[in-house]
Length: 80
Image (cartoon, one colour):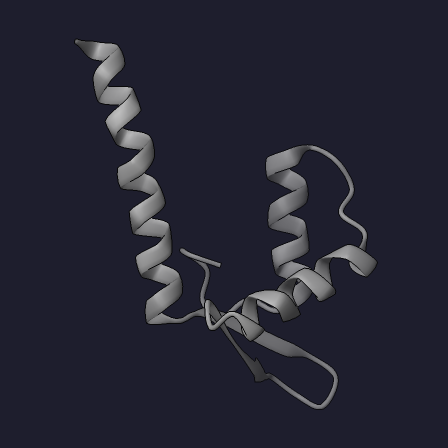
């Protein structure tokens, strides 16, 4: 969701499929999105009566930044 403007589930699915180069089944996607909402990492909104939108919360953004910092320390160590 980071970098996307309040994407709907299908847009997230397409983004994941491009990244992983495999089909993502909606039966796995939507329960995982609901888990992210329950954990306070993502907000779920409504674009229309049939389509939900998603966006990162401040906490979700902090978690991504923390993960990037964690990864960067190992990449920096490889350069030494």
